[in-house]
Image (cartoon, rainbow, N blue to C red):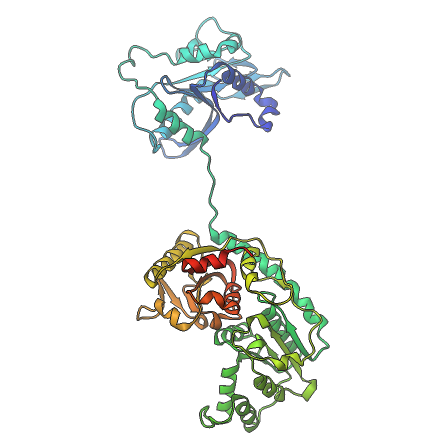
Length: 554
């Protein structure tokens, strides 16, 4: 039995009455030819004319044999007719007559076009081989003489030949005396080249950027569902809202600020981190009644308004200075204060902020927090005294399911489930020294940007502390291989972010490359925070024993 491509005809071909003749020929070739033959059914091609314009066609069958060569075959069913003008027609059993192309020219054209394709195959060693063409007319009775001078009977197989197509094929491979001296076998390399050219299995690779972009769209759509929680809490002026990383706390804090601003209220939105403060400010730039910043910058701004230098009263706490300076500056109180990452705020800071809210206990104070990210070791007793929102944030929207699975080993809070997309399995890289780390990070970022289509600004490299991050400073600032880098507060699409977990807390990135050393795996809160910064891609860079701890099963 011949080696057929495809091995079985698809259902749409079998069910197509217009292809019944081709199906008949396929079955005959499959049964009659031995396994030294490779038979390719329906091989389309795209070529060019002498003027450079595109032409296309299709070989109904291409028959190949390592020793004999190749044979291009056209099949025409029904009653075939050639008139005096050189026009071919075919009439089916329902007496429907249609114009058809010259089958000999079709077979000839396919032969030369496929030969041209074969010559440029990387698997082909150029040589002169036997290349023939022919036409099979499975329903037509053999003529007594040639069709035309250019169409001798030997080119054709007729109805009576269908039971002996193997003999006709062999006859078409007959080599004339003029060819016998220079014709070389097609060879195994030729068969392989044809297999690769006409039946190659092609699996197109999707760049990571495509998957990441889709994951980010899914995450964004699902995150928007959280907004309904704010509507249900609208009547509550004092509220503590808790939720694990990725449950939408920052988004809700921003949305609450916008809602209050639309009510013409004067709103103060605070956080602990400088980079997050910059992000909040940028996000709310179109809400003029909202002051968005981080706590220390807010204290400095108030001191400046009061005409006080920040170091004039070193014996007074920052909270006391804030109250004194706010009073001294004679500023109007805020209608609402919203705090993101409230677990990082000391009780003294929160008590001071409460004083600058309008209407005392009636003033609006919302604190969003996560005890599992208390990397600043604040007591947060103040938060515990606030009314707790009945809707605890329990759905993780930020991270893919696979990233969430990595993070949950270090989560000690209440139940949280993820509804993000499955995403990509986190990767681990064993690193033995600083030189190796820099090389692997450069390699990884280069791959993600140049091969996978991600922007440099989609990638964040996080270290445990600033000292560890200094290895990425070449004396002229951060660089990762050929890519420019910057810290979190100067994020831009063209630069990789290099920073610490603490400074990046509250922020997120499509890609996070998390760098750990021997001592870091025991710092669960930091690990949890670092892992949950990654939205779609997470990769670890650490010594072997740390990688083992990170990837072991519970």
